[in-house]
Image (cartoon, rainbow, N blue to C red):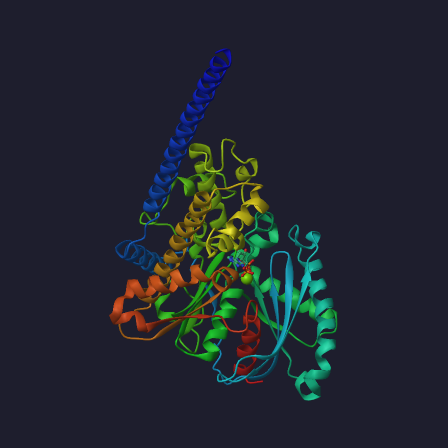
Amino acid sequence: MRKEVVVAAAAVTVGAAAVGVAVFLKHWEQQRERRLRQAKRLLRKFANDCATPVAKLWNIADDLASKMESGLSSEESILGMLVSYVAPLPTGEEKGIYYGINLRGTNFLMIRGSLGGKNLPISELQREEVAIPSTAMDGDSTKELFDLIAVELAKFISVHSEIDGKAESRERKLGFTVSFPVEEDARSSGTAIKWRSLSVNDIVGKELTNDINRALEKHGIDLRVFALANDTTGDLAGAIYYSKENVAAITLGMGTDVGYVESAEQVPKWHGQSPNSGEMIINMQWGNFSSSHLPFTEFDASLDAESSNPGSRMFEKLISGMYLGEIVRRVLLKMAQETALFGEWVPPKLATPYLLRSPDMAAMHQDTSEDFELVDEKLKEIFEINYSTQMARELVAEVCDVVAERGARLVGAGIVGIVKKLGRIANKKSVVTIEGGLYEHYRVFRNYLHNSVWEVLGNDHSDNVIIENCHGGSGAGSIFLAASQTYNAGS
Ligand code: ADP
Ligand code: MG
């Protein structure tokens, strides 16, 4: 009897505990589902805010085209629209060995390559990167920097002079391009600011060219620089070398920039001598473009407000490699805070600005494994999120998708805007080349970009715009500038 009572009591206790556990589990399960629904709602709202239907892309393209137009007659344009090159453009006939320097924020690239005419790719390409000590970039004096370049270039040339051969060595030419750094500290240095506004009739540009040539002479190098140009201008010169249908070159890496060919008569603000070809290269800082049609979200607003340059470079903040990962991080942080996407505790590292870089974002985005192993790996590695549910990982990949798709489609709209400004949509073939890690290495981004241009132009016109990778890779534009200057100068 007694034993039975105990057994019965025990059974009741076990039963109660089981019920308790079941209730708890049910509650937990309900809470989990509620949070998941919340997270999905947040994602849907974000995706909606980021949406770029064709009509919107057209509005953006139209807006860019008209701001380009007005920028060509105004010195005040936010797009800059600087006349960056009026020397003869390459013809594709130039042949021989050329040298180039591509000056970047923290390093410079020395390049040597052989051009064999427009039907052959650059060959015998040699590159060497040299780090620039931070002291050389500080302040206003570029003397130390140019001395360093001259010394390194002398070494680089002597290593290759045997290959160049005697006959060639007398004809060595040098092009010089500058990449505008987007990193904060480099951007705010005196030197970088000077270079940012490089234009042909600019005294600063001429002074810098003279300084470089003095350094080359001092170090016994028989090469002279004709003019400084930004790297996008160089890329465009490279593109034109291969085909006259090349109308624009875009840099799309950490930052973004555009060079395009404009006919001189379209540039009321140009008072200099008209180039023989009737054409000039305009540098458009489209990173600065802004429009009421751009799909800004709360995350873009906070990114901008907390950036070092609030209110400026708004287009760049939507499309370039420096910012894409940061936008994703901001969305994930909100999901973690409001929907416990990664558990009760918000992972502290998720609150660190710019911790997620676009290559890692691309890796997560392009993870095709069944249970998102790569996403899991990256979350651990970058944010120390040691456990994530399958659902959470899937949402992470989707956030990356929304951000990349929006950015890529906006670039597409920008391309259409340029081609429209040039009046070439309906009746002419246009090739646009793109240089930069974001375009070259982020496959899904690239696909979205191409698709958006096709979609916007539709069946009738999409064949008229061709998008290509730039020739010879980053910095190689300097070689084409060297080639065009000298050949056309009749040497
Ligand atoms: P920049 O010359 O502007 O510094 P690059 O043209 O070398 O930049 O491209 C580097 C940038 O491209 C990186 O900052 C990054 O934003 C982006 N990038 C590079 N590789 C990848 C990748 N695999 N996926 C996505 N973005 C990438
Ligand atoms: Mg680059």
